[in-house]
Image 1 (cartoon, helix red, strand yellow):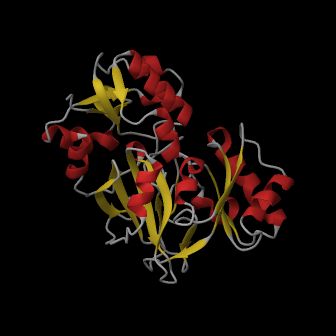
Image 2 (cartoon, one colour):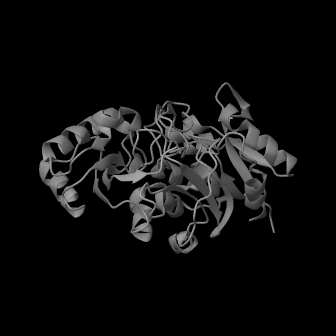
Length: 341
């Protein structure tokens, strides 16, 4: 059986080597006996998929991607360009969209994640008052909420473009949503999402810092929750480290865990990339069954503990290919599992 190789983004300044953010993963992969190829991420993002994959050898067989986020349509182009060269991304385009965008995974995780309602959009245009009122009503019409798109929030602009103190104040909902859409601009992913706000256990230290890696064109990161689909901040920016759908009651950092799943099995459990030194022991009761039901081969789940002690909640699901790793973690088991898949 062919051994999968892993594709990394190339360094924009030296396209013969991996992007510096992923260089350590490429080194570890080589130490494990694995093979990697390089792709031009800027080309992929700009819609030039055939040109972007020219450094991937023909007939390369099974492939994983580990890199910056891509919009679902661009990922589909990426997969098609590799197929034309005899390569096969092991995460299909529909599978990527299902794990990467909230509407793709929400129905499976409903009840285990903050309640959400979304309004699709064809572009950076804010929903009207009637659409927002209907979405708020689906969440009960009262209480605090978070505004995001299908992939990211703007937690670094918490009061301006993320947090809604009271859903019944539809004028305030509209102001926050309009500002969010304005700031996301052309990078608005899918549409607008309202999520019920939940209080999570905090580490007790207020913190503002990077929310995942910043993409090459300032538009995307990996799911470092964010960047990458987790507690993501806005594209290519840094922001307060809060879990999407909630946050620590004292304004500090939510204690979050990231779990990496391959074929329904957890292969790596660690802290969220926003807080790589936090010790976490998430309760995964019930989560494996949900991951298997989702049916995506390689995914991540970000979990946070409710402040009221009622248990751990899934705050985000992401495609494992674009989910960031916390600095300092031993990723050898994860990478070894990928090339053995």
